[in-house]
Every structure is written in structure tokens, then in C-alpha cells.
Image 1 (cartoon, rainbow, N blue to C red):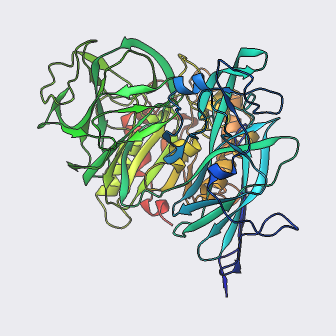
Image 2 (cartoon, rainbow, N blue to C red):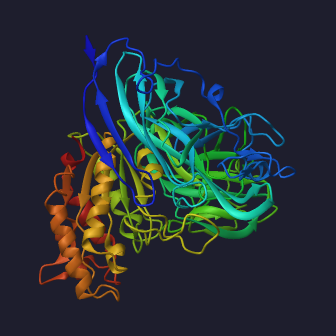
Length: 606
């Protein structure tokens, strides 16, 4: 008997990770093959395959040799980032355990150089996640996933170089490199890379790629990313940068967010994306907003692994435990977070178009307050909070975009972004699933290049490119079924060619299809009259829109013609005055509503 199926796909992300996959039907019960000419290898836990030391103590900086030249990671830098030995970190919704052997003064191997080793790895999910780094350059190779039903698939795993790899896609950055000559100031990076697997099949083991040659592919951890079955994403925001604040200390944030889908249970997601240090959360709660910072009833306390607070390591996330809390659809929630320690920089979504609140420094924990009197300050950003999920529901649509999707220049505190209008339309019909809608727009964001470089404290909150944030902001989102891509005007305004932009959109579509998602792409709206929107920009925009309307060379499942919706019929290079917010780039409330109302909801489903 043969099981499984055969298919192939490829994807490439500039400066990021290249992936390709092939499914092969194999005899049921067959053993995982080893390298050519060798007997199949028995799968072993990853830790038993470790053959290299990457981490040294600062007191003995020459005590490990990660890259074959005597260089290594600092155990003290890792601890300062919250990456302590044996700690389980959630990165892009996957749980990865930092090796217990990576201790200060330790002498045991803490990673494996990939060369066809068979790893015992079991579970069912939507992807495999690997914590990796290349030494001697970018390292790439093809491995095998073996399923318990006897079928197998291949994957190509690429690990960026630990010293020269892109900042935008790294999981954590460390400030020093150790060597026999001492410690030097130079950034070291580790990467979390995922590859898709066949949903619904139980994984039995994974064969790592063969030795890639001149470069080494180091694997520190591996896991199956569990699918978020039984959950629907109701609200989300993308981390757009890492900015200086306060300092904040012993005070409480009360963040206002607007739900799309409702449900009987809830959980939140907090993220320390781009950070250099861990952050401690004292307590957290959720409630429905009454008015301002006041709650409609007593806030419901949230826990993390059964504890009232948590610490989020640099680059990691934390989900709260599920809590019985009736989340209404189309409503404002208050998510309150107590920060007991001094915080000088935060990962942030910068353009909330929504007023939130904070108590004064030193005022303590006010997460349980129903009254809003303690919240004397205001915020127009969303620090740390990146998601609210509800129990049940059919899953979610992610809207990936720039400031127009983010809601820039729509009415503040009114929830009139086009994804908000789309969410209301989905709730008010029964022809297609009433998906939650997750707004992953970032003001000033681009498809092709990064605005925020991905590392360090910065005033630029334009985010890393859509391609570099695709894993975090789309694939790892709760219950995602469809992605709507509406982005590119910033690329064109800042000099990208039509060919560069269409290649970026094409790559996004291919990668999303490899994850089993439906891909819907919208045409780029006109912007004549804005200072950077020259005739040349419009000519390139027209070329990109022709590509989109043609279905992206067969890669797009559906197309939304937002350009046709908002343009002035008499001057098609401009937004219709009734839809223009006044800056000739961003539609106002009426234009955003017209965009959302134009969507044939059937295009969101396969």
C-alpha cells in the first residue's frame, strides 16, 4: 500500500529564508532513510545528537568553539536576554526549549551540526519550528519529515549566518562574541525558522539536512507548532518598531482594542518582539470598556501557566491561559497590564488610531480596577499586546498592509478602518463563514524593504518588510484561513521598481499557498497630489495593478480592485474627493467604507 501524495513548491524571501517542499508516496511503515549508502538511522531526542558547543562563559571566553575558528556566544548575554538554560520560549506561536547544556561554565555540547541525523519529534500541527544559525555563511540543506502513517515529505531549511544574517528575521540578537582572545563587541544572532507540514498527520520523526558543505547548519531546538484548533483570532496588531519610553515603572497600561469575532472564552498574546532584554508582567486582566478607562464590571484576571504574572524573554511571546469571559463581537475591550519593573524601551504598534490609558509611574497595580480614575495618562500606541483570541468560531482573515489598512487618518476611537467594516459585514451575513478579521497593517510599511531595521531602539516604526514579517504576522496568527494583501504604494513612492514589487507580491503568495492559505490581493489606490506621488510613481503603480488584475501570473486566488473603487473617474490618478482624507494618499472614513463594502465576501473562501 502507498500513502501520501506528491507535490512541489518553492519560495524565496530576500535576506530571509528559502524553503521548498516535496511530498512523496512511500510504503506504509517504511523506515526513515539515512544518507545514500547508509542504513536507516534510529531517531533520537535532539539533545542526544548534540555534537558542538556554541556557548561559553565570559570568564572563559575561549571555552567553546561554535564556528570552527574559536568564536562562541556569551552565556551571560543569553541570560541577560532571558534565554536561560532549559527555558521554553514561544516564538511565532511555536514552543522551543533553549538547551539545558548551554550553561555558564558548562562543558557539554549544546547544538547539533546538521548532517542527516534522525530526530525523534512527535506531534500534530501546522509547521515544524527550528531554532538555528549558520556558521561560515548561510547554510542550507534538504531534510525529511516522517509521519506515523508511513508517508514522508521533504523540506529545505536555510539558516542565516549568526554574524551577518538579516536583523529583520532574527529571533534574538546578542551584543558580544566570545573568543580565545577575549570578548568583542559584535552582534550575534539566532533564528527561528518554520517549515510547513501536512495538517492532520501525526509526525513521528524528522531527518535533518545533510552537511551543506563549507557552512555549517546548527540546530539548537526543534518542535511541532500546534495548530490553534478551537480558537479564532478576534483582534491583532503588528509590532512596528522598538521605541524608547518613560522610563515606565510600577504602573499599569490599560489598552483599548476592538473585537471582530466574539466567543465564550478568551486569551491574550503579549510579545517582546525586537527587544534586547526580557520584560516582567506583574498581573494582567481583561474587561469590556464602559467609557474611557472605566470597565463595564470587574476586570477578569488573566494567568500565564497558572501564575498571575510572567516574564517574556527578548524576542519571545507569551499567551495567557484561557479564561471564561464572554467576549462580545464589535466591542471595545480593556486589556490591563501591570509593569512592576523599570521599562525604558518597548515593542510597539505605533499608529493605533485609538486612545488607551496608563497610570502614573510608581502608582502600582491597577489591573483589577473597574473605575478608570487611576489612569491619568493616555497612549495612542499598543505596546506589548499583539493579539486577543476567542474560543470557537470558524477562524480568521488576516489583512496585511500599510497605513491605509492600519486606519491612518480615519476617525480616532471610532473603529472605521476598512478591516473593521469588513468584520461587521462578515458578522451580518450567513453565506460565508463569519471569520474574525485581524488587522496587520503598519503605517509606512513596505513589501520589498525594511523601514525599521529590525534591531535596536529607533524612532522609525514603519516595521520590517511584509516579506520579513510574514511568518509572525500571518502564518503564526490564530486560526488564519485567508490573507488579504493590500500594500505597495510606499515601495513605489520610495523608488522600488514595478518588477521588484510584483516579485515581492508573488513571493508572498507562493509562501502563503505553501501554508495552505487562500491569497487575495488588492490593487494599489491612486495618490496623485501627495508630494511623492509623481507621474513616474503612477506609471509604476499602473504596471503593478495590471499584474494584480491578471491574477499575479496565476498565484492569486482572488483580486480586489480597490483602485477602481476609490479613484476619481474624471482624474483616475487621484482619489475621489469624497473619499479623500485630505492628504491625497489615505482614504477617509467614506473611502475606507467603500473599499470594504466592495468586497465580494465569497472571494475570501476557497
